[in-house]
Length: 141
Image 1 (cartoon, rainbow, N blue to C red):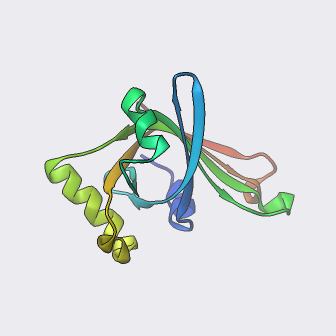
Image 2 (cartoon, one colour):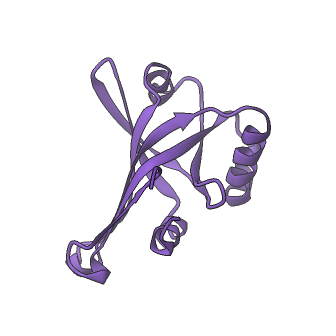
């Protein structure tokens, strides 16, 4: 079960930084995301000709982060994610697509495919709950 604090934070934002690595070369990019609470996946729309797609062919393990940009220490919040990036097919693809288009309906007009990020670990930092306060979620717990 995911603590509601994770869900609240995730739903307050819409851009994540996706980190990939292939051939020992790290790379990151920013992506609009939609989150399915039911499936616990982050969905992004991407194109075949991107560096991160090429990296994912070699290594589907990813990192991601979502942050609240602030200079006030007491308001610092951020989520770090590690997991696996998957291109679904069939019913899973239909559900991922539906999740994304619900948040970004205009995206139907642009080419691309839907990438699901399946979290394995998430760490939420939220200084509003105390300096350096961190919550952890693991897929296997």
